[in-house]
Amino acid sequence: MTKFKLCGLRSIEDIEIANRYHPDYVGFVFAPSKRQVTKEQAKKLITQLNPAILPVGVFVNTPLEELLEISHTAGLKVIQLHGEESPELVKRLKQNSSCEVWKAIRVKNEESVKGLERYQADRYLMDAYQSGAYGGSGKQFQWKLIQHLPKERLILAGGLNRKNLIEAVTTVRPYAVDLSSGAETDGHKDESKVKQLIELMKGVS
Image 1 (cartoon, rainbow, N blue to C red):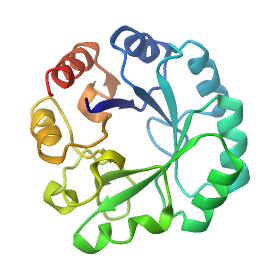
Image 2 (image 1 turned 90 degrees about the horizontal axis):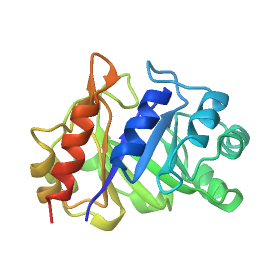
Image 3 (image 1 turned 180 degrees about the horizontal axis):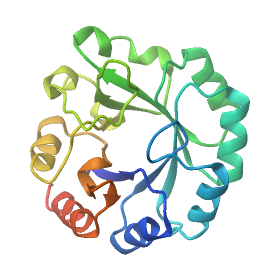
Image 4 (image 1 turned 90 degrees about the vertical axis):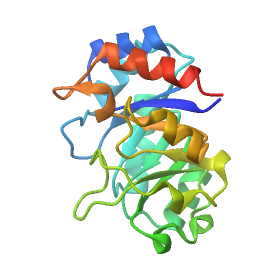
């Protein structure tokens, strides 16, 4: 079954929602964003998280040493790189950390998804391209652009919500889906939306 990542957690209320409905992953944003948290905040929240739910750190163009320090301090299990990180940084990160490494790709056209293998990441998060932004736009891209890629390594993001989630999963068949704004109301995690999204995922074979 396709796994579920709930991203952008920043409060104990968010953690309580996650613990009730049990997504496979939860994301903490360390890059500049309205959902940004510090490593101390993330550490405190992760101590309250069900240990079966894996915490993911979202970073943009963060130096290797800082990635290693934050991931260790906060207790992350996955490091998600959402900027212009090089294949060499991904390689060095995998050599020096026990975390899984996910590389985000902003999908604009066919050219933007070529050569993913050069990163040697554990998985690839496919998000919508938006000029001047590294992600979190809430925009959807053309899923047909990634249907030829190895599905067991794909995480689908970008404008997913209750209305298009089933179509997205059945069309792309990704390893996981990543939702943030689609699980929110007025910028805050909405328990009823999270519950419905999780139930929708369970109904997709």
